[in-house]
Length: 193
Image: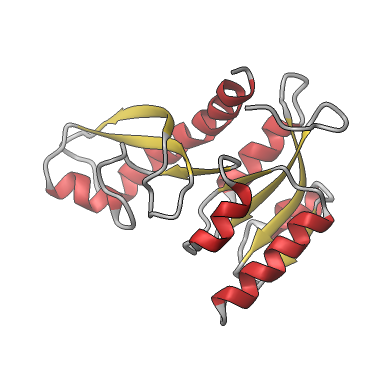
């Protein structure tokens, strides 16, 4: 994938809805010499998202966009992305499904991280479902985003063993630790293609 990088870094926006731990790990990654991305913008649909503090700490421009009307919200986001010349979008716990109309504007340039080994357990409650099905492994996946939920082409995955004593919470913590490593790996893999 070739994108124009301006200062040799790909102008990136990160979308999130909650604590922003993947956002924080992407920001740290973006500060490394080997990183191909520069995070210019963070976008959330939740004005109480804890992850907003990372925007303040690292002086990254932030936008809070309410999703009362999805079309209006997506148009606002597209305008912000255009204004900031964004070339890549990283979804990091963004709890809204983007429409086909939105994704086609950024075809092949939207990544998502999902807490399961896709195509298993698309959507929510992935840890609960993996434990209930007595799976031996779960994990996380970074994939390209298309208009269907958690269905885009897989870039990288990381397996995590499920122990008998694991609860959805303990499994979530183990997988989240791997997500923080996997997202940067996926970005490096795409941009070294």
